[in-house]
Image 1 (tube, rainbow, N blue to C red):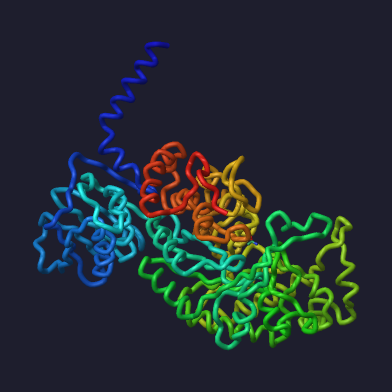
Image 2: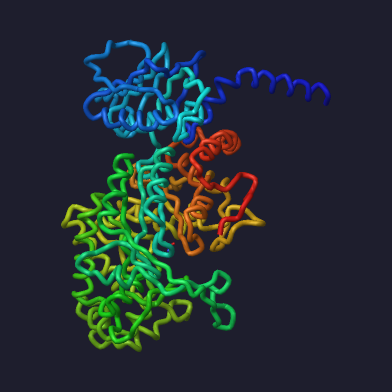
Length: 575
Ligand code: ACM
């Protein structure tokens, strides 16, 4: 026993001796596909120039903007033509079409002989290379003022790196709580640091419509504001129907100019902003603004003040579809993303089952016989004899989504929706975001549709991340280890089907998140774990080793003033 202990001690001492090179190398998140560290370091100093030309130049400018505040170095940008090959004191950003084997987002970083070269076939790869370079430097590099007494150097190394998946997303619900533009920019910066590339912006909800639509001004004049918000303990209304509210109005929206600013800010960081406009459910705020959008225009609804699934849904008249096309026209003019998310989740069919106009649509489209009545729809029982949604109502939902799918496709865009868009049959061009487990994603991939895996079990960051004294969450339990352990690639798909699994995404729903500080608490570090799931080779992932790297990485997030959840629990509890 004694001998075993001393052997272990000797081993640990040996590891410690190797530590300086290894530690710096292994603290990268996400971990690169391949990395070899050799001895020595490459120092950035007053003579260091950035060498870039053409489409590499904006990446060099970004690198200079990243490095200059803390280092105070001049980091002049020069074109390669004026720079001797092989020169020292340079960071070379080289676009190299011959390096296409690295893929559209891959890069090779070599630090040796007094210089650093990042080579990539595309600017995105150079951009991910500079994210790695930032992490290789002392964490003081993340300061926004000159940090004195720091040696700006990286270990001599060769890194070859490329993402496992092309869709590495972060979703943010700004419907339940409006979150300010500056917070979103900070979040985009953090996404870039973690090599995430899709910001899924959930812009409309029962409780708030958050995007200016010029043709329908009441969407924000009315729909962006609620008169109050249910107090958390009452949200399930299980106190004999009693609910208490905070009596405080809440709201806000982004003008189209705000949204364009976000899109441009994201694009500079190689992030695509995918907007989500919810339909046919989660549409109470829009119907509060324009009652004719609902199934019962004489019935007034208010912008939602509580949580849960609301009964209001869009009607199925041509005018309803036209409204959504008009909205999407403005959305497409602001958001260049090919993918446009239309929600499609949690749409109760109870209004359609009570609407003569919906019944007429179902008859016209041949979904029910001409003799069908609303009573038939409402009395439907499934094979177990339970009252259930009539299959024709699912067909009606599928019809609704097909109209929008065809419209988006005619404009060169591609519809994406949550799991439930499979109900009644998937629209021909649709992509699926699988949140109710992976089944919808697997079915869609097998049918040749693209899929993003976002199962609530592993990727919902509105769930608790620890037991015990944690800030209020909506429920669930998704500790860091669980997010880290997720594998987006389901078993049982052939190679062609696997190519339809575009990637993975973390979700933040904000019923109980009303401030940027709490949003960061819920998102980080779980999103760092998921970033590695999306980027790094599966075989490179090791939960214990990740935790070691994460401890160092969290110190970077400290410098960046990110209110992440500390690994050993909350020190202060953000509301
Ligand atoms: C969802 O969580 N309703 C997509």
